[in-house]
Image (tube, rainbow, N blue to C red):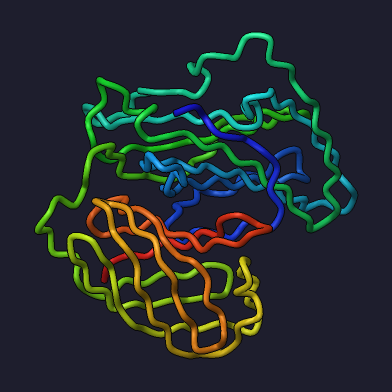
Length: 281
């Protein structure tokens, strides 16, 4: 599977399971945050993908201009590094700079202005299978991200710790029943799910704050209500529809990142996926 796009995103729905590193003041005006999470690949072949995102916030009083290059394969905005704990220290085991470049692939220069208190977000996606390859075992890895921009932003920013696995994480017979909960951008969801070999069903509740900005049509929800869910399942992946009593009935599916984490997403025709990670309580 080829590395997917590393592009500018505006208003991407957040992922509650992402582990953000500490913020760093850069040049006194730009503040940088990085996060990483597991998402479903979205392809028929399935699989897990690492989504890494860098948020650049202008904390100064004047407009800042940031530029970067992206080639025709989507690479160029973010450098992802993956570390493994060994002997009490972190050892670098993979870097996105090691990915092969596409011959004859032109680079597009992207330039964005960030107003005071404004944000620009960069993202990079890569299949877990690409990172682990044939030599790295499943397990917990520490991730960092570096924005490849001008002006140059110093150092790597912690993007969190993820459990990476390319095989089936929930073999047949694994008990996954229970309450799964998560929140993002003002929308909280709790589902009591029942899992069989070929289905996932359940009911639950939601809470949408007055400042809810969740995408994919969910931004109009306010207050509390009930939900019901029914989906088909194939190994670690599932896809179905989730019905909100507030009138929203979007597709919702995902992949098990591990036996306690659902890398889930809602879908919309015009915005693509809106991510929401659910954790088993």
